Image (cartoon, rainbow, N blue to C red; front, side, top):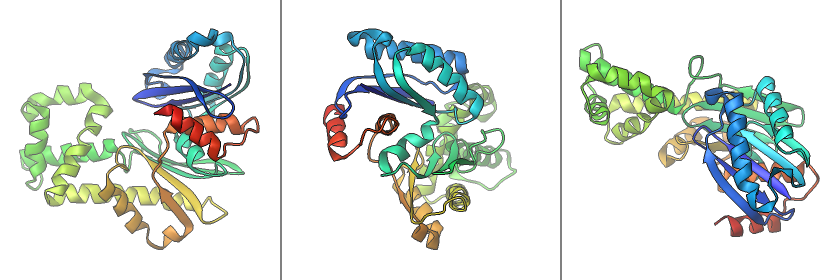
Length: 314
């Protein structure tokens, strides 16, 4: 049996399957990003989730051939190694244990060989290049250092424009009224609400920016354009680490789901699109984690494997 885990900042998806991709059990639980909740809390949540996934099959003591856990916030070696140790303790009879960043889950599922570029533009932004030589990170250094092209950066820019429109430091923009409506309280009294809400709450204002841009607000349009350009900078930097072209680039995250925004990125990439095939994932990220678990022990993830998974996943 195989286990695939896709652990994000919002939720965690787990699947238990046969070697040919048939789903035996699946479970969705709380977020497991150690950058947000710490390694210990992440391990506690994974334990509960694995217990739920395996409760009808003998629990965590059963023999598992391979597991891959792609967990958000675990790209650095220290966190990755700490989570590996926890997984080894949680699944003592698992023959092959592997873990890494959730950023690769979609790439594993969409790329034939598992190599390529992955671009994430959700609450945060990041990109990674995976080649035979290893992994290279581009961006994704956290919202305090570098959040270019993220939902947080767009939401923050929208709020900034709204407040500056309100207090006279900036141009008038419809973002002022739209952000005020979303806040549900006056700008002065909303400050504690914004700071207590943190990065996820601020990122939620990205949708407000997109709505204002759709209405023709020039400041909102500039914010969206800047975000698209920032993500193109990610991609061009990634291309410098790729040796074989064209390469696959899987783009995912809340901002990428916006068709017009995705189109902006493609247009801005220009001739560089000849060196990459940018696509949005069709398959659920947890499928990519499962594919990685299978490939790690030499199981072919062919058309039948994929069909078995999708038929059972619905």
